[in-house]
Image (cartoon, rainbow, N blue to C red; front, side, top):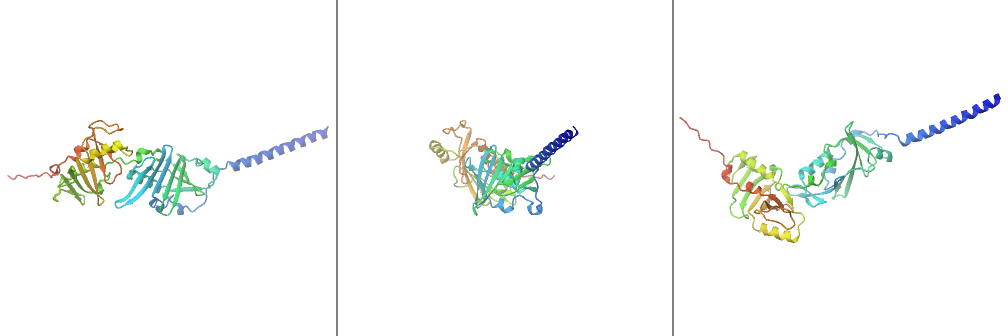
Length: 345
């Protein structure tokens, strides 16, 4: 009887030991598979910024993909400076200020930690299927980089990113601009004239086409505005006038024109109401402003409530509110300095 009891105890002990061993091995495997990402002990002084300054400065192509769409931009180097254009999903002038904001956001990304790039880490940081990616291209040397943006950690205000062709995951400070909210409207430049008044050094307005003497000429020298005779004018009124022109926006950009629409546009622009000539960064740019238009085939616009403006440095005509005519219809007397007469008794 005693022998049987000992035998049963030995068998139970073996079973317990076997089960414990299996659980231990399973736990070790589970822990290995689901281990927390390990960070590399890199010298982060060499990786302060995510991008080198050359990468961003020399990029002439940017493609941003987020949940709102895919937007492709191309840069052209012209005499007055770099000019960005939207090439997809629409071919339009890009808002330089907004593109520069995107580039500046990338420039300011600072690295906090570097992790191994493996399937588990990619999944943990939502980088296996990133919702945002940014392709930077350099057509001169044929290089490109694709930044993929994943999880944002609100606790420590950080974001996890990686590059398509780099074997590392980077923990960075959260982006200073919400790239996930960028949509088509943000990229399109709807300004008729330059939004930065600093680049304008001279303005001329002609009645009809450019011929004879301008009805208004303003010239800027060292931030002081003068008339066509070189006399200093009322600076507040000059600034207000230039600011109004800079804030003028198009209601519709006619980037898809059929033959019937082009024929009507040509008829309107054949006899413009005004020609505006701006000297921008030393380059002369001409704008033609029609009178009030009735209708355009296929375009929903109210009769006699808008006009068309074309520009020598823009590809597409623009439909603009009739209020623009009130801006153009200024005379030199509007800008004269008030003469203060002192009376002596």
